[in-house]
Length: 70
Ligand SMILES: [Zn+2]
Image 1 (cartoon, protein in one colour):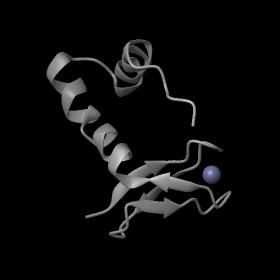
Image 2 (cartoon, protein in one colour):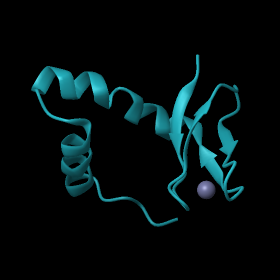
Image 3 (cartoon, rainbow, N blue to C red):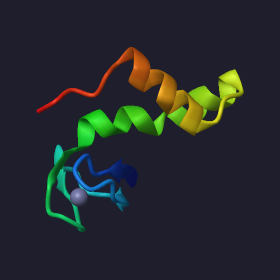
Image 4 (cartoon, protein in one colour):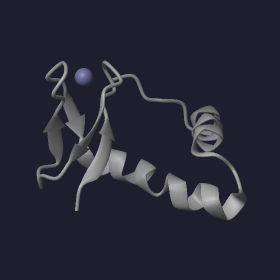
């Protein structure tokens, strides 16, 4: 099943259907962790439950869980 990944470096979004834990961004070749991104995939379901847009929910989550600097 394909997952939607978002590159943390350039913001490129694409469908990843591989099985590796890290995908390579087609745009900038950055290594994007698949496991971590899969959490965001369920945001649409959470958003539906709470009647929020995914965008609003992501903003809330970023406030609660600031993005780690790597
Ligand atoms: Zn990228």
